[in-house]
Length: 169
Image (cartoon, rainbow, N blue to C red; front, side, top):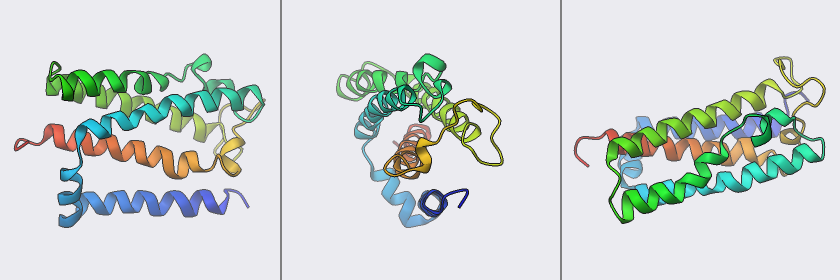
């Protein structure tokens, strides 16, 4: 079935849950209690994801445009996350505006790879990478990238941005 059921059944509830957390009073209490330092360190998972994408490219499962060789700079988020967490929250050298800007930049990098992945997947909306489509995310275990990892990282940035913009923190 196109798109695969796991992809739809996995992404939709996850996104709805994130929306519910931001809209409900208890959800906002929960997300406001999450530690910014750990949310920032969470982005280091993007290093492993980008290495995985590169390996999948070498094996013909994703197009080059989804790798750091093809203009996907999302690995920068993972590489800079420990620096932002350490200097921003442990040493308190970086100010909130810089950490907020970093979150917005990393969010843009995440959106960039999501759009690249979506538009290169062999679905009716495919616009890129016809010579080597993104077939990895249609198969287990790689389906967990869009179903779990991407929403988790998205959630981390949205929570961080909310907390950094909050006037009472």
